[in-house]
Image (cartoon, rainbow, N blue to C red; front, top):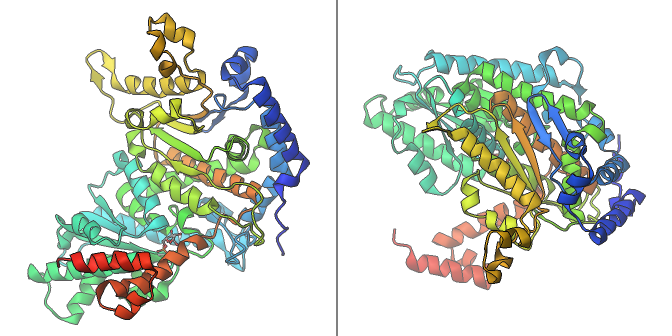
Length: 565
Ligand code: F6P
């Protein structure tokens, strides 16, 4: 079925109404202080509880009327209909002519048979693969799966990049307190030789297992690192006298120390990994949407199948909430729509994500691929140019570290930077510093920052503290810096699953309003192609050097002159 053309959202009456509303707010003056004072119900009406997460949207630069107009905008682009098309397997990834079905990865087994897409029972296939991943994970965890010398696995090294790395590493870091089998995880992604060198330096080949993860199994970085890992393994085993130099011994060692995750099992076999040691997934899973597919195999190993199931259940709970909650009360949809409000009306292009939980320290990096590879586009899903600004620059660091680095700009800079604060009531590491509960000290900082950003500090308040007049302006906080607070009970596999699905759907909402195919990523291709052409010029090819532009040539000449090895 042909997809409808994207609506040019800027030509809708709903957009015009929002523009008028925005202009009016600018004239009247945007004031969170006033809005809070005028509306005693503001917090209650803008707070939403989803499972064990509380969403407080009240410190955003929106009124009830703004939200109402944004919801109307969502309906004008048929947000709900497009989501239904997505979960039912329509090919909404138009430029690759693919279904977009990451939500199927976390559907419960009972839904097998309910989603036939392009002739495939997607839920049944997902659960068949999950069963084999869980079986493998149990074997590694129990020590039944051993290295070639019979020793149990102590470290699993994930080799992958982009979506085949960022999700697993983020989730591993986030859920470290749940890694209970005594198996360590490491992640190699960069083609920079320093990455693999540092990650393998102190490992024992006899107890190391590599999981090579690549959707395409054609990614330069991953295949290069996988070959290096294989050479490291065989050399280490031979040096230790654990295997002889024969081909058969090498094959046997690779089969005990390498597994693969890919949609392309033929290339896995060509690489030398036995397809019986490979876990598949499907073209309808985008790399950046794949942490809950076989791409998360390393997580099933270190956390255990049960926790991986909890993680999937958290994602499914969020999918269900997003799909079945009217837009007016749908915190996820509202967050996406509010982001559009900031980008397209406030012209605010950067968005901070500030986890008040050290375990989420890789979450902003993960979100960067999810959001920016999805919505960093200038043409719409039918190939026509976009009609408004798209994409947001997502970035962030955990609090309180960020407070001592870049918060100055968020509090007092000239740019408006909406920020999502994420915190949890409970910590797995409760600590006291004398009388002081350290978690409470930490949470006090989270609350203080959102309060300071929203309500600021007036010149009168600064003066009242006895501040000399000449430095009063520097100490004024104008406030009205928008934040969303996501406050959870505890960071566990379920909650992490919810957070990931939340941002997937926020990305969907923004992409739909802008008319984008959020599921392709052609913008990464040109650089890959040019790298293949340029690399020979670095070492020997003068012909390749001559092909380059003047700047590239000059940089290569510098390299050739200075290389010392
Ligand atoms: O170059 C971008 C990209 O295609 C990402 O979308 C993807 O997550 C990453 O490369 C890795 O791709 P693969 O899993 O196929 O190795």
